[in-house]
Length: 42
Image (cartoon, rainbow, N blue to C red; front, side, top):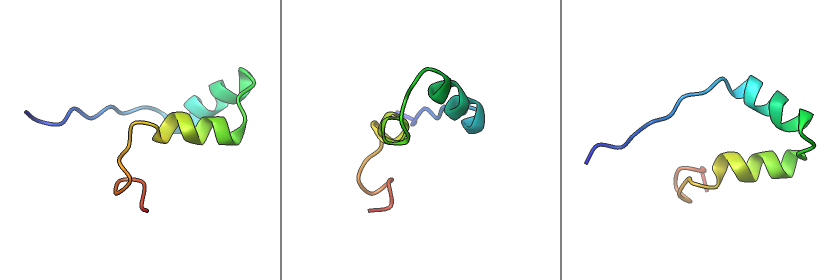
């Protein structure tokens, strides 16, 4: 099965998250939560 890629305007996603009270740590965890250890750059 082919991997499904999702694209988003990262700056807008971060702006929206901050507007909803998310901290930088929360945002990073949300954006990298589904990535493997290798994808995160170790």
